[in-house]
Length: 411
Image (cartoon, rainbow, N blue to C red; front, side, top):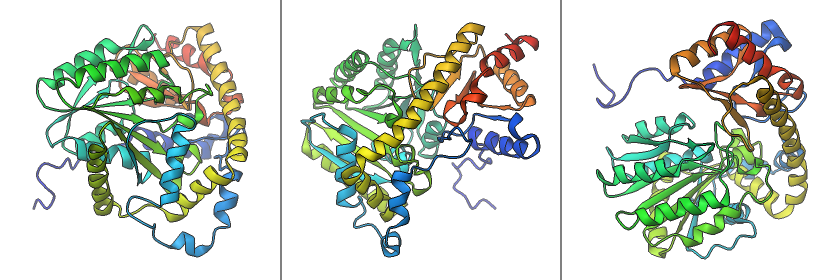
């Protein structure tokens, strides 16, 4: 008998990240340090252990149990948390637009809530052709179709493809929702320049003359950007037209190494206050009906870090950013020396081997697995989580990968 709705996909979920990560962990129990686990997008230290910032958890561990036990003050999140998120994300950048912050369970909750509330079932969301696979799953679960724009053209964002994809979608529906994951794109580690952002906003403003346009900016990895001016592009949001809305998805998971707490937020910006209020209203209803409210202790910890302990936290985080720089620089240098093709990387948790076609890349991925190298297969490309590899395991890895590809006639 069919108890689940007829339109549901009842095939077992096969997450490309967690599935391979579990295999890597099992292999490590047998082969130990021989295993290279570059799967999960969490930060590991040079000691091979998951990083949990002392500047975060010392405060959390000493919170009164009743603060950890109680509900949040409201469905949209605690007021101090919402204010802290806004200050944290924009810093010294002055935003001259009405705004609202609604707490969500991680950045995932924000992205899913946006897809659910912006588009009608059966409509199309615009995603990059190279992106986190969970975006597509969220679209599917919200009964949305997907149109994809080409991410790169000559090692830069393909603005022509974005413009063309928006135009195609506008022919079939009266609203556009387009997602970008910037800065520190997952999986390539690319970050747009301010000039690229300026061009993108121009494209959205032009498109908004035909239909409303919503830009969803997933900034999950923004706090691991190497460029200290990584938020400068946000000033351009002040130039959006009346028919453009910006929704920023923020994640405490990556920023605070707070993966378990599931704290995030949607930041809504628009030129008209009424539009912001409408978005806030439906986002709050989604929260109440889907997760009710998020972790009170998680919100209180973030608010404390932002208001009382930010300098110490940033100092601790910077130590790991420097480690990430060392890892990524070493890999990129050795990849260039051996001719391993990599998408343009600037900063962040991941970099990606550029493949030729899905079938060949699948074979390459299997060869890596056979030699205890665990990466994530993404269509025709392969993602490497530089965030989880100590320098000693990065050294020589690109050359080994290139050699395995050539030895097996897959180059």
